[in-house]
Length: 107
Image 1 (tube, rainbow, N blue to C red):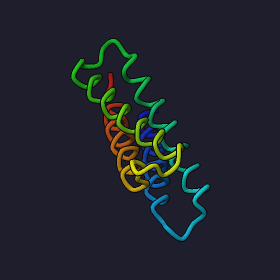
Image 2: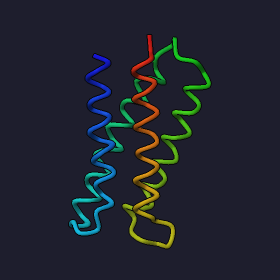
Image 3: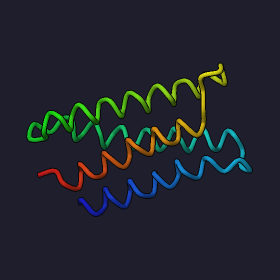
């Protein structure tokens, strides 16, 4: 099961990175970011709900998830001066990478 999570996390991390391709349709890039965030959020939530996970790991996942959520929310509201597609992709990627590492090492 761990290998499956790592593969899934890697695929969605790549999807988030691909959204930085400026040649694509903005709607498609936004949808890829949303999809990647939802997968990463799910991985983070399942790790946070595990009672055996270190509290420091849980707090880091919560912080990364909040940062990614805020970035995605700003992006979906439109470019109001705070929305940055590259920063959003980095935030989603950071959450994905950390959640995947924790999933791989969880008991």
